[in-house]
Amino acid sequence: MQVVPVSIVIPTYNGQTHIREAVRSVLAQTCIPYELLVSDSGSTDDTLDIVRDEMKGARFPLRILPERTPGMVPNWNAAARAARGEYIKFLFQDDVLEPGCVERMWDVVAHQPKVGFVWCAREVIACPGYELHPVGKWLVENTHLDRKNLRLKPVQHGRRILRSRKLLDDNWNKIGEPTCVMMKRSVFEAVGGFSPRLKQLVDVEMWYRALTATWAAFIEEPLARFRVHLDQMTAHNLTTGDADGDWVALMTSLAEPALYRCLHPAARRRVRLELDKAAEQVPRPPLVDVLYETARKASWVQRAVRLARSTAGA
Image (cartoon, rainbow, N blue to C red):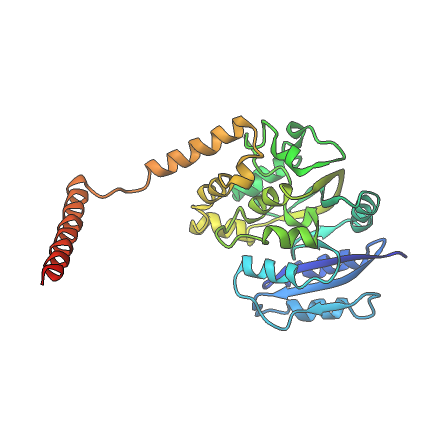
């Protein structure tokens, strides 16, 4: 079997329910990855013991980062930045790779070295109760993520994808979850990794930035399976409201010059509209308070000027 310079990275936290299946899907790959790297965020269950047990006798090394990285986004970044392979293949603890996933993705970049971002279609594993989770229900019913609107070629520069008129229509995550993606490590480093400003749309925002920097390839075959269940972070964020500011943070990122100039005029208008709407919702101080503060500052300046003049005269 061919050994490929791909690090499979699993950021994890209390993942004992499904991580055994995730690791077994790595062991079932039709090529041999460079390594399996696990970054733990402080699990209190048997997650790491399960990983070690499954990896006994594996034909490639297991590395578990010695430091525990609190927080979802820091943990994602720690896992990716510690990878030693030329490419990073993400796999999340609840998800599964099809046996030919890594080999198919590697075949693309081996024949097209300019490609630094590869993603594939995926299927959804719907756990009992998913219909109580609005985002999960939507994912089950919209597995294809409206990619037809992007008019994808097998290989194109990422800026062509961002230029799509339909990029921000309806479903604005047309790439999918990290388990669908393999990225060149140098591209990940160049764009600065996942942004800690977001909690829910972290991957979407990162994909947009990565697409400005490299060529991208899409594989229509579903080579990964994404699990939807009530215990995942998406459901938690919806319940607690932790990710309520993510949409504005995403629009703010899209307004940055490097991204904004890549967008279709229709998408630019959407960004401006969303940011204007957000600005209107920001509480403003009453006019009396604004006038008082202006007068207070003005009187402070006047006293400073008088003091300076008197000092100069003395």
